[in-house]
Amino acid sequence: MIRRFLSIFEPFILMLLGTVVLASLLPARGQAATIVGYVADVAIFLLFFLHGAKLSRAAIWDGLRNWPLHLAVLGVTFVAFPALGLGLTALPFVDARMATGVLFLTLLPSTVQSSIAFTAIARGNVAAAVCSASFSNLLGILITPALVALLMRNAGNAGAMSIESVETIIVQLLVPFVAGHVLRPWIGAWVTRRKAMLTIVDRGSILLVVYGAFGAAVVEGLWSRVSLGDLLLIGLLSCALLAIVLALTLTIARLMRLPREDAIVLLFCGSKKSLASGVPMAGVLFPAAQVGVILLPLMLFHQIQLIACAVIARRYADRADARVEAMAPVA
Image (cartoon, rainbow, N blue to C red):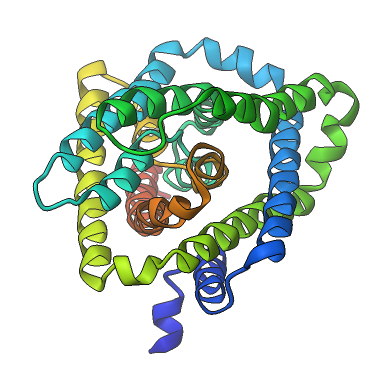
């Protein structure tokens, strides 16, 4: 029974939960917290450098050819999602602490790995998914901080950007990404061959930021301010948000008369929010003591979207297989 329950969680989610537990029991304090922060900053710099080196320019140019699909994905990601976030955070029973995290979640770019993986499982247009997810993450480096500055300031939330925040984003996120992409002709093939290294840097940087963020929040009294009821509410809001967006992407696909393969891309790329981008961005945009609370909605939504989209992708695959079998000539 326990093994079956744990099987619905990917190993990285269990590592995240373990990191939260460790930060709750043994948070970094004083000089140790400073060291953790410096190490996390270096890991984030390296992460964006490697992602820049991995992004193919051919993928960028190829993606421009299917611009209506990519504009639809970007519209759902950076327009519809934030609008829904503003609506959810305006509900009277959502307090300011949770509202900041829920709204931040809706401002993030799409995922890359899981969007492509689920598109492939569902027999969708994988090449288009690669382009859409890459565009979303590339533009998210600029769009997400801008949306945070615009929407969170107007909503009266903490996290409105200062000049120092803008400088940090440029130095810690944009500069390494551009540097990696510029150096791609020399190091791109080397980076591509070392997927394990990229995975370690990717997940290691997230775990470091989560440990530092939750540790700082625990020192400030996180678990005395967040109750089980708050966590349940975040889970329900995440489920409602995902259900609305999934229905919206399907509706847009019908209105645009997209082929089945492209509709699958819109469904999976448009409905995702990136934990890999969200964690380091939160560390840059918000005070350390607030990051732990702000990341709670993102962590819950991430797991919910993986479970739901895994089920949906498998159903699409079953339908595609049944269609192929029905069209096969009878021997």
